[in-house]
Length: 131
Image (tube, rainbow, N blue to C red; front, top):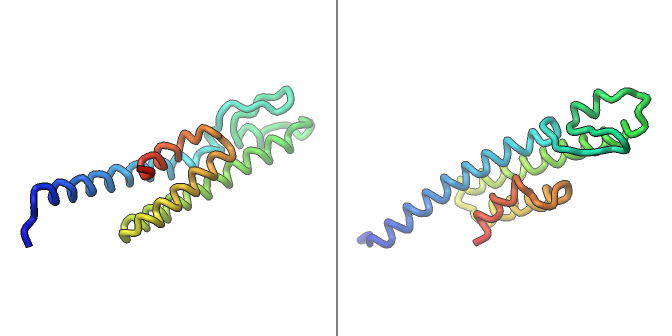
């Protein structure tokens, strides 16, 4: 069987894409796991509570404490769920199952949009496979 330059080039592009996608997945997985700890600007009542750490540190007398903690705990849970989808996607890619990988990347993207419509973590990963 002879290899054409086009076939070799296509194969090399696939390898580069797979490597690039794995890097994107690694970054998104790590970032997702840190959403709640790193946080972002959020206000609960008259209190700015920008992470799960800040929410846990609120005094018991703060009336928005329960709401802030519930929000940031939800963010932590969604972060873990999206990271898990990312891990499954990586495994699927390694096994050559691109469809399964894409489905889990979409699931992570969809989950992130529940807490951040712009999906800055999983949006770029989804865009890379949605071609």
